[in-house]
Image (cartoon, rainbow, N blue to C red; front, side):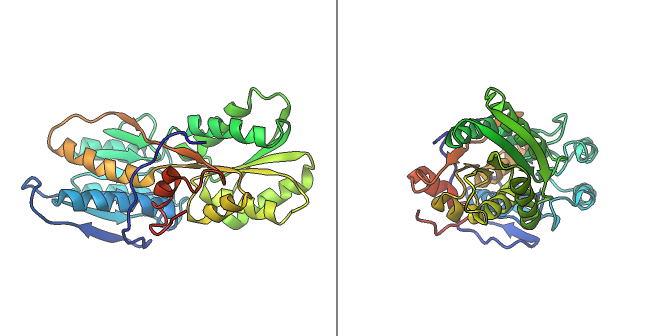
Length: 326
């Protein structure tokens, strides 16, 4: 099910450590800009794809340096807050942020804006949106579309559950909300509840296994991010006698083989590379005194074993696997 074509791919280095990417060259404005990219963690291919996109934009412009840092864990809110505050103290010329918590990062973003350091949020924003711009997939819309699609694969009836990664980030809140909205019109499905993986594949697997054991009528399980979806897939694969449809989100490096084999029936494939790329471009516009949109909905597609080798899917998956050919 193709919902939208995704952005370009990149062959950039994908190390999880804090690095600096700079580019010099002719053709861009004489002024050089240095921006700070702060994502939720440095441990996921998704966030490294955001970094790759930002690096590619810097290389194209030739007058931008993007410095990348992120907590090792996607739940280390205190460290991420400190990173934002330190970037302000260091007089960064701009911060590109994937906020771990829409409320927890609100004050740091307000502080940055008040100090003259513009903030653009990607994937996960703050509430209310006080950043200059927010680039993200519509998580509610995409999760609702995923729910409707996978509910049909599950036979249109039974029980469904959700393994979320946290309940503090905007994405952790929006995706289960969207999935439940998508299921709301299906009275033949019963919601059995939600568990939290804390971005741990092993925890997601344990929670999914427990759901499978305690709910024999379970026919659909939604893993709300890459780590959660992988854990759900492992649990379902370990229970071959059960016919359970697995719905995922992020469709990254780890999920591809499970999608090809059909263990994951469908997953939302986002455009993290494009988020990083466009965020740098928008930040440069801001520095040049231009107006940028307050909200940008980035494209996504629902990928299945039937379309995972399509040109659109291959191009999108190359965000995570540059050598991927389908």
